[in-house]
Image (cartoon, rainbow over all chains, first blue to last red; front, side, top):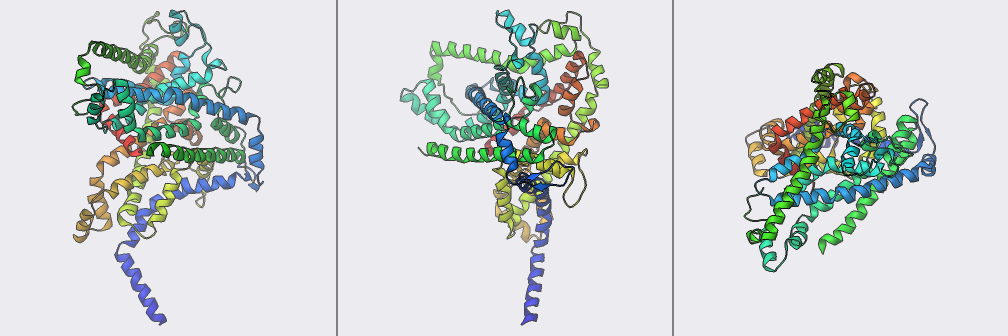
Length: 304
Length: 294
């Protein structure tokens, strides 16, 4: 009986091996190792770290919820959260319609469309850091700064731009829109090639003007991609770092301090890795909740 | 753009005067706007790259009041070492591309073609990370790189610290898997009957059939790596290893403005030229990537 079982399992190991079971494991090894070390591992470690005191020097110790209470009572957090929301809101107002409009417009041009395409994509090719450094010059607050001298020709300004508490955030959003619009519009353009054109004929016969054709025929057909791009943009803007970090470093007077800058400051300036991960976990939680709510809200729209 | 016979605006519309001239006017206005936004900053950078610091500061919109300073360009190349940083950037991007492609093609091959019993668990675990925003693993990932669990080695100040984490992208694996899923099973069965081993199946059938998607993932990885700032800033504190995005803000603090501008100009010039040379393939690839997101 026992011998039979070992024989049987021995044979099944051989058939398993012959059918390529071992090579399946070998092929999966890179993926599993890379994800264990750099994706699954860090996610779990992040959850653990948020309940520990850790500064990389002394051994880690459990501190319960105190990281979370420390982060949540930090007087800088409400300001950073509001700024992040403000950035996301401005980016949505400016950054969302521009590429969509551009894509619908370009898709109408048959011969010269590619030229608009190439020109509007150029800013996306400029390395973001180089673009930010360049725009810092454009935003020079003195009267001889680039933007101030251009506006000066029309008798406007000069503005303090990045040095002004009220203008700093819109200035950052303006640069981000400039840098991102071309890339987004390419994605919409690809979606627009799938729009069924015979519907325009029908709409026109029903007496629909150009705008109502765009509104009732074009946009509904690319609704799927519009909704996804909007969610991706929201998730991206909530985690904005490079622009405020390089443009203003969070200033002036914390007017551009975002949640990610705060996380960076906790971890890499104060060396408090527990607080940094606690805030990361909180932000990730908010973003997950946002995605779920968004999914349910937009699902209702898509079915009607 | 497409080969479709009509767009939103019909030929009947185009014959009406208001629309014909209105459309032409809008076309010209948008062209001016797009040209100013796309080319304007680059031209300004070109001008400032060969100006004196004094000119850049006092008359940024004037054309070379003190003459063209062509020697700024070789100065920036030699003294700011833009060439070395661009080399690092390219090396990091290519390494990230290779590691990403290796991990996601082999992984997708197992999950889509070989389909072992434990496959769905791995697929589920990969899929789950797609829904978690990247911020959650920023700090622990940094600590992992400082001291690799079990191995005990530090990847800090090695290119592996950038190459390996970039391969752990769920999106790429799932995109690749979905593409492999669409390969007809009959082809795979036929190769099996011909006695092809798994390795041969992978290299001789699946990879050649997947060239388009491999190209798109490669392009997206290179763009992503090219744009990355925070991660290389954290794991590559050694200046000789830094990519241009990390080096530029650091260098900026110690260089005079004219050289900063020439350095920026050189950093922008190469990607712009590459883009203009390959714009068709490039835009098609990026557009395809958007279709995948849907």
